Amino acid sequence: MAHIPNAAGRPSWRASVLTLFPEMFPGPLGFSLVGQALQAELWSLALHQIRDFGIGRHRAVDDTPAGGGAGMVMRADVLAAAIDEARSQNPDLPLLYMSPRGAPFTQDKARALSQGPGVMLLAGRFEGIDERVIEARGITEVSIGDYVLSGGELAAMTLLDACVRLIPGVLGAEESLAHESFEGGLLEYPQYTKPREWEGRSTPDVLMSGDHKKIAEWRRGQSERITRERRPDLLRSKSDG
Ligand code: ADE
View 1 (tube, protein in one colour):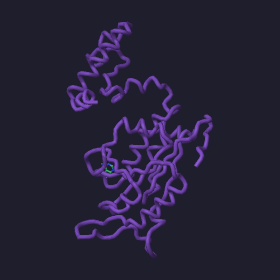
View 2: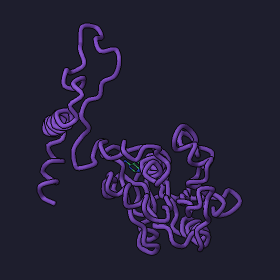
View 3: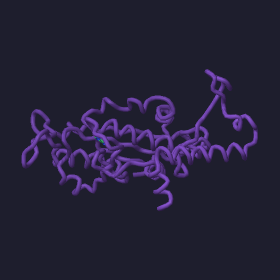
């Protein structure tokens, strides 16, 4: 499928979401930077209601787990029909299933996705989805963290927010991307603004010195200290890779 150029003359980054709750979208993605980018057609959002592919008069999308146990499982046949329909419209997009069982979503993955044509996300509910549809449709599972949400929609929105802000032209100053957390494998240094004195606390003198080399060195040192204190695992993975 050809990319549709947007007002800026670039092909639009495409998000496609399969969900039982399309009304939740764009939700937070309709606000601020990411919302303005949606309006400006720097990215697009297609929503697919899984229930449209449900079985019978009640449009059932789930059933009891084989082997017994609590909760309900989303049916492979229903999901496959929804996926096949969504894919017929965007056959080139990678398909990710939002799941606490997935590989961790990271800034590197957000960057890689933002540089591609877009992403298709499956947001599940209930206890999970039939394993066979994961295998049969080549679905990659992605987690946004080690906790369990009541559905994949918030996880999908989180992933999309992280990707969309990295699309060229979305963030005004590309400069501000260069220094933020995880870029360069470190957490961000502390920031200060006016007033210079507040409740007996001063802005560090070095930041008022006008010496850009010294300021850069101080910031680097602070980034390293904060990363060492809070996320030593990031320093280890940096030296590994
Ligand atoms: N769905 C439920 N919990 C999730 C998580 N932690 N990450 C991604 N999708 C989810």
